[in-house]
Every structure is written in structure tokens, then in C-alpha cells.
Length: 211
Image 1 (cartoon, rainbow, N blue to C red):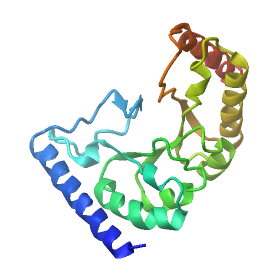
Image 2 (cartoon, rainbow, N blue to C red; image 1 turned 60 degrees about the vertical axis):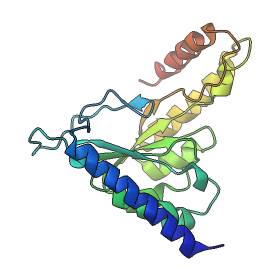
Image 3 (cartoon, rainbow, N blue to C red; image 1 turned 30 degrees about the horizontal axis):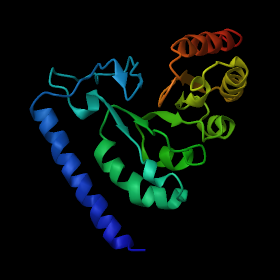
């Protein structure tokens, strides 16, 4: 282990990213009203900021960060070597979306403690939606990512999809957690495009039982 080396490396990457962000602002490249935010809806009535003057600044825009390489480390190490630096980069954004494919169900508290602008957290097939929703409550949006393996076979079976979506929605309803459902990381549909249609119809049917 070389923690000091890792801190210097992370800090250097943070400085590079911060310089890039400053150029985005100077060149007018930030978007206060994007359609998508890393495969998810960028829905918000809170952006841009109320004092927006025409030039979009970080406070007017969504930020998004993740740390898949820290998926297997402890919450303490994740906070020390990732969140400390991402807080410096994204803490000034209007709203923040954290996560990608890494399981974050047991790390909600460290995210909450670091980011006052946190709005949405990715909860993947490798995370427990019950644990996540219990920690999130009504404070954050759960960006639920169902298992794409269920559309990867030559024939579509709705049963595992229904069980998975029921589990997500029951947890969210129980704990008052707002939820969005995003199918992503689809590597194959076995040359069966209808798998996607049937998946969407199956998910819609489950949602209709709750809302």
C-alpha cells in the first residue's frame, strides 16, 4: 500500500479536471438543461440557479461522478481516496448524480456526508435496493439499474424481471424513496429486439400496480 502516492495521484487528476471545468465555463460549454445525464433523465425544476445570468456555471448544472474501481473497498477508503476529491470538483454543482455500476447500497451515508447537493444515486443489480432505500429515505432519487441479463437470451422470461422490479418498488414505497428505472449496459439481446419491448411492457405492468 502506498496511500500518500495515491493521494498525490488523485489530487493531480482532480487538478486536471478542475482546469478542464474552468475552460468549460469560459467557453460557454456547460448545459443547464440537458436531456440526459449518463443514460438517465436529467429532470429538474431547480436548475439553472435562481441568479443565473446567461452564462452557465457549475451551480446551474448537474454534476455526475462515480468510482467503479472502489467497488470492493471499505466505505472509509472510498471516502478518503475518491469522495474527498470529487467533493472538491463537484461540490459547487447545482445538483449531483453519483454512481455507475458499483454497488453503493452500503455507502449511502458517506455520500450524504460529503455532498450537500446530492440528488440521485445509482443502485445497480449488485446492490440491495432494500438497504439502499432504507438509507436514502425520501432524500434522494434511487436510479435503479435492473439486470440487463434478462434481455440477453434468445427467449424472454418475464418472471425474473417482475420479481426484480417488485423488489425495487416495494423497497422504495416502504421507505418513501423516489425511483427511476433505467435499463443500461445491455451487451446483447441475442438478435431479439423484441426482448427490449417485452421487458419495457413487463416493467410498465409492475409499475402500474404501485402508481
